[in-house]
Amino acid sequence: MSYELIATLMFSTLMLMLLTGQRVFGAIGFVAVVAALLLWGDRGGFDLGFSAAMKLMKWYPLLTLPMFIFMGYVLSESKIADDLYKMFHVWMGGLRGGLAIGTIGLMVLISAMNGLSVAGMAIGSTIALPELLKRGYDKRMVTGVIQAGSSLGILVPPSVVLVLYAMIARQPVGQLWLAGVVPGLMMAGLFILYIVVRCRINPALGPVLRSEERDMPRAEKLRLLRSGLLPVVIFATMMVPFVNGWTSLVESSAIGALTAFLAAVLKGRMTREVFENSVRNTLGITCMFMWIILAALAFGAVFDGLGAVKAIETLFTDRLSLSPWMILILMQLSFILMGTFLDDTAMLVIVAPLYVPLVDALGFDLIWYGILYTITTQIAYMTPPFGYNLFLMRAMAPPEISLRDIYSSITPFVLVMVLALILVMVFPGLATWLPEYIYNKP
Image (cartoon, rainbow, N blue to C red; front, side):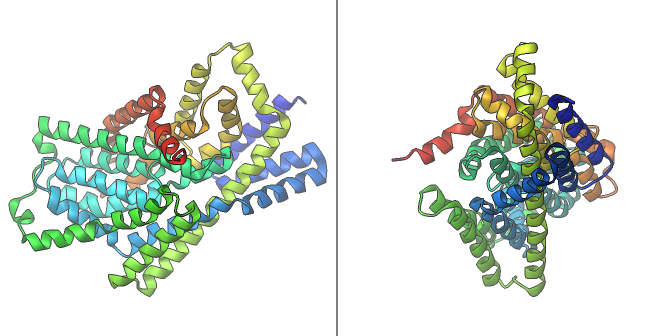
């Protein structure tokens, strides 16, 4: 049996196991270890898993993962995120579509606190969605706003998905996070621009908040402003030392976690229940990601041993005579296709062993490609008929919002994200400028 056929069999077996509902790390690890045992015997099969585990344990930046997840859960469980939305509610309610714009701002800051799109979706659905519907906002527009805003969680630093990409692609996590800043803010700005234009054309989509809800003493407004900006202060406390080179990435993540904990304590919200929920959720998500990374390293090692990457490169460049850009576009389209039934981490660990070395061989920058992957994953998340975010939204939305409403709500936001993807592809500096500026400072 040829190595190309073995690689194809591995990939098809993996996809079949995932379609039957197996856990991502279990399916990937099982296929990797069984393939290694059949190819190289007992010694090769056992050494593969052990080597992947040792590589994972020695990867120092992985310590950032539990720190940032803990920080996000502390801010969420202690209701500091609720204060943030109250601030947007009062300060932006006088604009057409102001609460929808504030929701995008909320999502950006939630992303900067947690790094997971699921967290943004949960907070947006429980805090923002009921308030928007109660105040007469169009249900289709606001469900699209929350889905689009929550997708920023895997692009705006500290993105947990980019930590996983950094491990597989062997790229610096700090550079990847900095590379996501400008595209993430640009995408949020495009979402806001769309909301402003739509609400100006049709004011009924986002009515102005009633004056009695906005009128309050200036001292109360300033108090809400201080409470709402607390997450921004925590994020700045964490990132400013890192950007200026005063602390390492791991040290900055520890500062962020400690600052969030102290903020909850000083506000009198760090109860036993909040602490216990934060620690339990942090442990669960961290362990899940570590198992996924471990399985991905083992799977990638088998593919490297088979020479599958070189075979695919030869197929695309020699036999099909495709240009590097055409190959890159086909890879992005495959992500969108897989996104109809897989989540972002599953897509990454399945194809990264193939795509990342191929992208490098084609001469593209792997930091830039990490941002392209992330944006494409965001699009795949929300592309009907089986986008991951669509069903997540349906599970969290109230009964009056149907699946048809959710499908129709997301189309304009997907188009905005496609525009952002094209801009980053055409102008790579949008992703590469900030990390180059920070890391090349004298």
